[in-house]
Image (cartoon, rainbow, N blue to C red; front, side, top):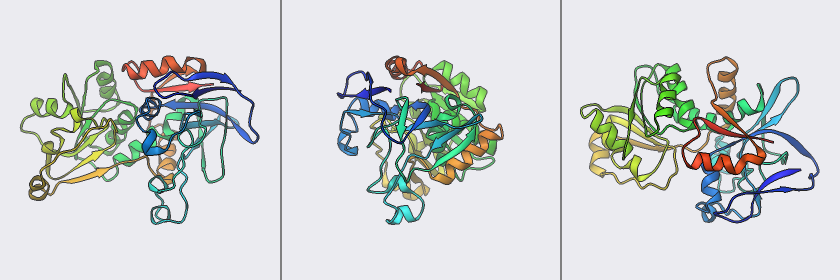
Length: 320
């Protein structure tokens, strides 16, 4: 089988022919996300214990039958700890993720060990693959937000594109901040109330555009210093900052600001199996539109370059 293999951090993936392992399933499509870029560049190798050679790709849709694909819920915990018993295996100290700890979906076939649920969905794999990670994360990131809530969305990637659609369904007022005009235009098309183009820091640009406005929620899908710097100051009293992106930013916030305004801060990592099932239902009802940009497996390094340079509007999806 053909596979794209990480052999050395900071280098392009190598396309190699491998023997087909026993008990594999056919990959329909696998999304390429910024998490893969962090791994390729070696930025998460110590935290996650990543050891090349490794087939990356964690946002996986497998080929099903009769026009159905199978979405992989990609977080297997120990099943015994407190967080696992509550249904949050992504926070387990012993969590395993295909494409991170074991070979993933940037190949023609992938082994699915026991303990990784598969969720059937009506749709072509290249279209639905982004639901498996970006869709789940977006769903988790907007939980509890309702009609009339004012929400600032920082970032214009695939996760935030799903989130804007979900927030629009909920009746929230959504302001999106980003740097790419094509992506901001897509956000308006997907249901954003308004957009702000940032030339420098995201949160600073929003504060300058609306100096008197405060938001019930600020959801940061970037997670860099340029997005986090002024984010807490954009919140209304009892507002909430939600962190989704992981671009290495540091949050520095006054304790007095948190206390006097009752501000909350919450980190968002992936989601639950139940979240994935709800995302699948939203898609099958026609309420959720994945923005898939297909590349062949042989084009994976081109896709990586396009994603790094901000040329992908939506989710780059690798089709073997």
